[in-house]
Amino acid sequence: MPPDTSQKAQELYFERLAAMTPAERLALGVALWSAGDSLQRSALRRSYPQADETEILFRMAVATFGPELARKAYRKS
Image (cartoon, rainbow, N blue to C red):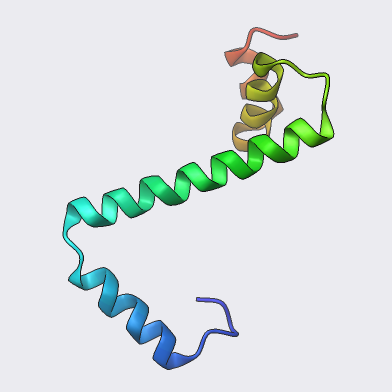
């Protein structure tokens, strides 16, 4: 947890997680991943306004997996 999170807030957070079903925890994880993905796409679109969707996906792959693996996956030299 971040250092600015109180002990009580941290306890409450873990209690809430423990009370969730596996399906609820999975849904929460998917929602958080989706939000992060959307934020990353938006940031890349602002940085590269002329980029098409393939270029945005490539740049996301570079950020996630590094340039070497992204170039191999997208067959870029």
